[in-house]
Image (cartoon, rainbow, N blue to C red; front, side, top):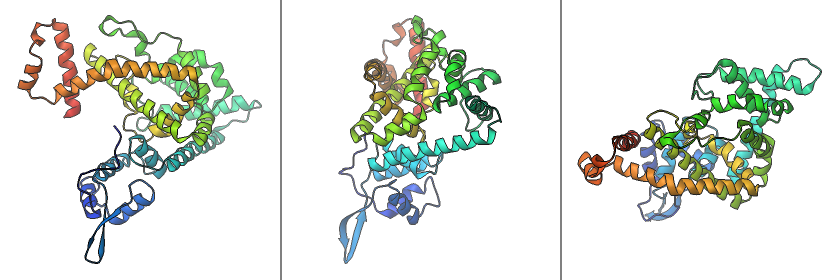
Amino acid sequence: MEHSSESTLPRLRTGDLIEIGRQIEPDLTERKLEYWRNQNLLPAPERSGQEGKRPIWTYPDETADQLLTLLRLRKESRDPNILRAALWFEGYPVKMTRVRNSIGTCLRQLQATFEKELEKRRPQVADEGEASWLAIEQVASKLARKRREGFPRLGRQSQTDRIQAVALMLGLLFENPLAMRRLEHDAPSVERLVGLDQGRRVRPAGIGPWLDRPPEETLEVFARVGNLSRLTEVIDIASDEELLLARTFCRNLLDGMTAFSKITDAFVGMDNTSGMAGIELLQGNPYTAVVILPLFVSILRSAALVENLEQVVHSLQTSIIPLEQQAKELAVLSEDDRSKRLKNLSKLPFVEQLRIKRLIAKYSETVG
């Protein structure tokens, strides 16, 4: 849902915002608010009245939500570029020119940081591609061993396979030629790393696995539309319309796939049934907008990929999102009201009763 810039609710003064924000950040000051306004992380106040000779400056009531979201995002990053893109991604009013520039800046910083890391580790060998690949493997080894701030651990995987998976992802992202040669061999390790391999094995409710194409096919598409050079190029020239459309597609897809993951987990009674648990980690993450938005802009420039994307989003919106909404509604009801809504529950087969109860329990945890 977009956050409207117009509201009939009471407007807030700076003191009100400080009082609200101090519930999360006790040392919040007017000076910090001013800095965030200058960084386009909060809207500027508007003159809305007069107290004697003194003008009254106020904010729309929804500015409180934007401030609380900003404070939540700042727990993961203090970089204004990342925060600016993340706030806009979540629907808050941020100038799109600054969003575009912020994402481009972050991508170039990522490129520079990676190249610096490679240069420190590049061995003295004649073949430049081989030297870069050996350096990538060293960076991958460091990242793969991280427990905090590293790649999620969504399944059992040997350290060797984990390092190979991270190396392949880095190689594809930064267009190392040797990465393409290792695609077929190491692609299954990448699926295992992100938990996607579950989508090849588990059959929720007797339905066949949704993932049946060779793992290297998806990564080959990523190498074409999602490498860092491509992402930087498309974000620099993306129109406002492309950015808005990419945001809509991306948010719908993330919401739908997260719902699908939770629902299948509840139905089957095990974690990551669908292989999409990794998608849930992108929700609310400030770094998501920096990488995912330009990726979707890149996808929008391919007619075939857009058609596939539209079909997936349509299926999620018509089949999964309504079921999630029902689960959320049931989760907030009292036991008596829930019993009234589900008065025929006891007449269903035991397996169906169990699935519904697990689904409600999962969303009750979210509400709690």
